[in-house]
Image 1 (tube, rainbow, N blue to C red):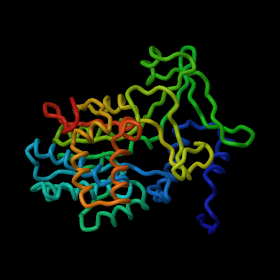
Image 2 (spheres, helix red, strand yellow; image 1 turned 45 degrees about the vertical axis):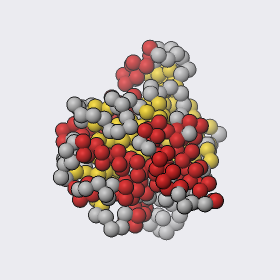
Image 3 (cartoon, rainbow, N blue to C red; image 1 turned 120 degrees about the horizontal axis):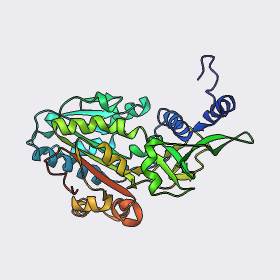
Image 4 (tube, rainbow, N blue to C red; image 1 turned 180 degrees about the vertical axis):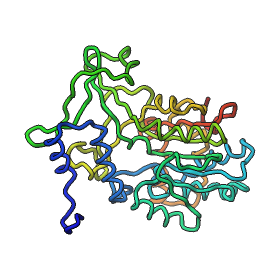
Length: 357
């Protein structure tokens, strides 16, 4: 609400006014301001929200990630104090599953300082309720994480970071922008200009190709990698995407359906596929694993055996939902291939279980 009590203006109207006054804005600014409004004003998850993530589908996902981190902790001589962190923890469901799965690992919970990197006041309140009974610290940024061993998960976090989009010209690049056409928000292109950050992409693109660049990725990941390289730990990054970005992957989700990214800024979840090559480059000075399809990773960790154990005693609807959840997480035509996993770990150590160096 405004100071006078009037409803806050729709973000689309704000954008139209800004563009009319100052000209088109980069896709990164449009996406960043849209998602800032979106994530700080609602709980976007579940049937009543706009999308569902793996932890909301089945407890098995978080349990296996938790045991993977716990095994890495043991392999690094079980440090007596460490940060157990999550980036963008949603409702806190994933962290709750991690804590439940690791409670029988001697010393793990007692040594863990649970830290959630979360900007949304709405979601912080939900997380506090989900994790009631645990001492939780919230942080706004990764560079605020303590200087100690760090064991971290980031599930569907990096896909929501703002991206810049560039269309290849004859010798350099046109930045894709959001402007106005007949009074409505519309995509267009800026002038052709050199882009030093994309110098290496001139060799593998042709005029008209679109590439995406997430400039916030490295500054967020570097503090994580530095702590793991210096103090020990491990990070598991799970997201949709692949190696070496090419093509337009910007999308909007509203009510569990794909929508026009320009139709309702601040009211829909805007995401883009993650370029895991950029994650790998930002992992230095720590080491990174190969990217592994989510389905393969979960099978290596024993999801089928866990599913069979949980299925005992289930009947009818509960059993059908359980089988469907297992399929959704692992099958190549569902989340199994689209989602990838990359691990970050200290040099001269073994990678987290289920992943290859």
